[in-house]
Image (cartoon, rainbow, N blue to C red):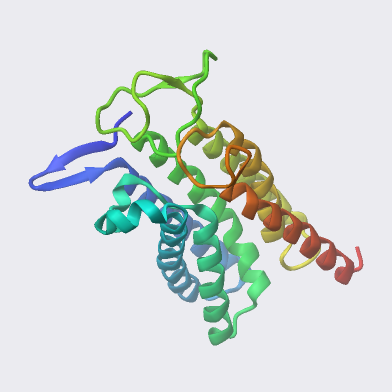
Length: 254
C-alpha cells in the first residue's frame, strides 16, 4: 500500500500517523457534539479525550513492547518508533479506562453515562485507524488464495511483499464500523447506563477473537499458534461485558 504519504522537506509524513490523527479528530468531534445533546460539558469531554488519547497510546505501546520484550531489549530505541505500527488495542483500552475513571471521579462526572457517550466515538475511531494499519501494512493477515486477498509491493510496507494476504486490517475496519452503527441504535433504546459501552466491548471482543485467526503478523501468543495474547485478553473482556450487561439489566428491572 502506501506507508509513506509524502515527504515535506526533511519530514516524512506516514499514513499510519495521519490515520490515527484523523481517527482522533473524528472521534472527539463526534463526542463533543453528542455531549451537548446529553447535557454534558463538551469542554470537559474534550479534555477527557486528550487524556484518553495519551493513555491509550502509552498503554497500547507498553503491551506491545511487553509481548515482544526480547526484541526491544536488544533494540530499545525502537520502542519510540510508533510510525512502524505496534499498538495493541487492549493495552490502550486498559490504560484509557484507568485514566478516564480517575478523571471522571475528579470532575464528578457520571462514569457510565460518559462511557456510553464515548463508545461510538471509540468504535468509529478504530475503524478509521485500521485503515492506517492497512496503508502501513501492519497487522497483516495470513496468506490466502481467495480473490479478496491483498498483495503488498511497497518496500516500506510492514507486511510481507508479493504474497496474497487476508486483508485483516479491512476486516477489523468493517467490524468497527458495523459496531459504530449498532451502538448508535443501542443509544436510542438503552435501558440502563453503561449498556452502550458493554455492548461495544461484547461486540468488539467477539469480532476481534474471530479475526485473530486470520492474522499472520507476530503479535504474541499465550499458547503458541493457538491462542494469541489479544484473544486471551478478549476472553476476559467478553466475560466481563456479559456479566456487567446482565447486572445493569437486572438493576434496571428489565
